[in-house]
Image 1 (spheres, rainbow, N blue to C red):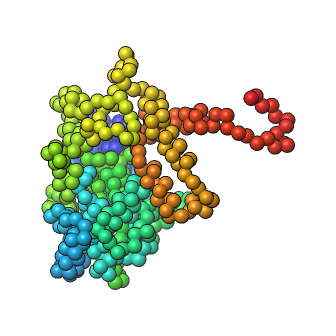
Image 2 (image 1 turned 135 degrees about the horizontal axis):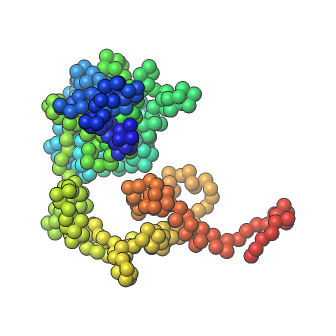
Image 3 (image 1 turned 45 degrees about the vertical axis):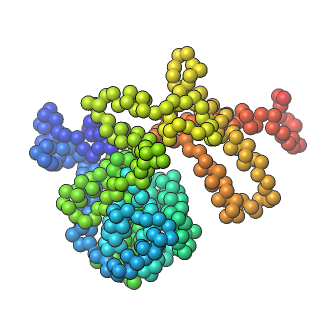
Length: 442
């Protein structure tokens, strides 16, 4: 039991049956299921096993009964050519992906960073609009596993729509979480939309699918209309999954996207569109490829046999001891090094956060504080909101952990403590009559 639990905590659904377990597993312990795959016996928690089988059934059903959508190919090509003439040219695989999404009610778009996945989505939305097949705003769902991922999807799609000089009003395009889409109801003890009450949307686009675990993916698939009902009405139904199997694995159990891709690609189905050519891999003016892509590729190559990877990466990128907004670094990726310390080449967490506070966060707060705000009503004005969002996007501090010493929560707490020390020191206060019984130390 403990071995299975530890495996699920690491994202696995099951563990191979050990020799010493076989005798006791013959008793058929409640809560456990043994299944055979590729000449190996695997043991699952019963709930996990049934969720896996159910999701496999739903995927198989979707594939076997997929509904093709008829589109005017000549007209689509004309629209594409017109959009490209006003903006930029798409790559061959991007165009192929757009046609696949137009012609099928179900499609998976797989690709790494910079391959143009959201660019494809933006072109797809505009083409559907031109074809009069774009659903009304309330019937379009742009979703992702987390709020941040949903916000990034919204921003990326809107930015790409602006680039292609689209006449499509994109203000209504707002991303949301999968939980928000399915509408969790405490009174129901589950999601409002489920196998008994399908989602009313006609276009559902899910980004960062690699982050979606088994249970959430099953809940989403249970809420998708059956194939026999998806063609009801004049607007065809489309369900599109987007993700990178090498990026951001699910927090809970199950690498669903990777499993989907392995099954669909092995069967040579046409439900997967792969974008492999990265726009960030194009040589720059100096004929060099993006350092970010180089770093990502080196990390993906890591294996126990390649133990010198850290040294190789360390030697590939320049080092710096400065973090500032206006510094022109020699590379897109630099190693931050503490050259002032005699004990360590690297900053401690607190030293790093204090440096970020001094050089980035405090100056940003100072800039925002200097804005001339006429009244509180300006906070609701689109121009102010856009200006504020652009200011916030000037810098990002990312960490792969939520909790723990290097986690988001701990770093946020440290920043708040620095803010309290620097921003609220000697702050003026107002004494009210009911404050007199209290003692104040000034």
